[in-house]
Image 1: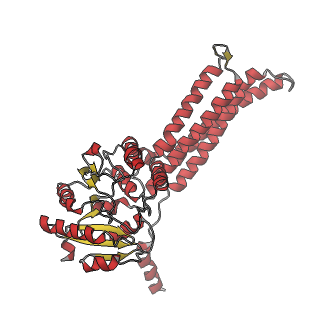
Image 2: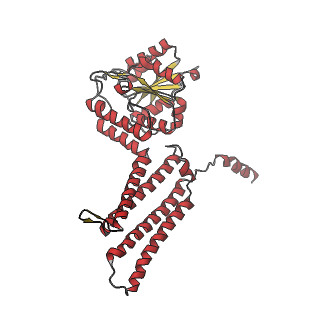
Image 3: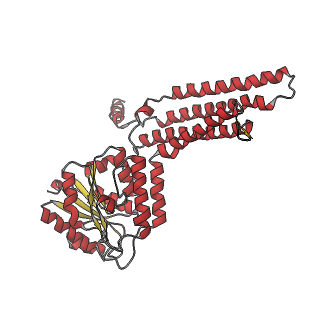
Length: 399
């Protein structure tokens, strides 16, 4: 009968004796009243109070989690759950588990993930004293805005810890964050895997715990979330800044090569050098974006990128060699000029207009060729030796 459960309510727990019982009772009551066949799973992260005995006394199932962290507790709890759907929520009585049926209704409609929204923008409500000032007016709105901007995900409250999702989606996402950023990783990966999402407005109540305060640390966990954004978006972290730098380099070249004057300033060789620096840094960013995206796809962190899957080592090598060859030709042209004056003094403002682009192209060509070889390493698939064992055994038998 345990395999026929529709819902598992999973709560992470670390010394939550003050409020755990209330949360479990509400979850069970909500499922009973709505006719939902489900269970409550408490992922205990090393509680030293009466949390485990309270949970077991109320009929919840407990899972011991040795690895510390909010995400670690949830991952172990979800993996031990038996329901087709999972609803996760904190055990501090800030989320009202009587709102469970609204999440299940959306999941039954076919959504992969149903996110709770505490913020008024998404129809939610924050009770007085339920959320710190910085979280409510700066942290949560800013991070949620970044998620919508960077990943095109229609979520208004990315940090809300109460959400529902299908077990199938969870298994596909391969989540890895052991800390508070676990919730954000789930949202980002759901978007990258094109999961269908919906929102349910909920009410956030003040933390009911008395023995200890919240486990969340504002600046530490805020930085971890921002870092996660950067890791899962090579486009914003590397590619787009790289394009900006390359654009600056092209503008600098366009102005410095013909010695354009702007006002009283003459843009000359020094402008060319700075433009080359911008170009080199920009191209490095583009290469890093490519390698990061290939690596993320190979590790299952992000779905494969169609264009990058078609990119071959040979194409990268050809591009790099051609760029380097053009650079060598430019440098050789200056050497010829030097030879014609018996290796004496040169007209540096003129020759540098060939040397600087030449050196830049050689550097870009070399970087590209090395990055192409590295991409080839990253694209190598792990070989599956499982199918080779029977053959080996047969050979052993024949021997």
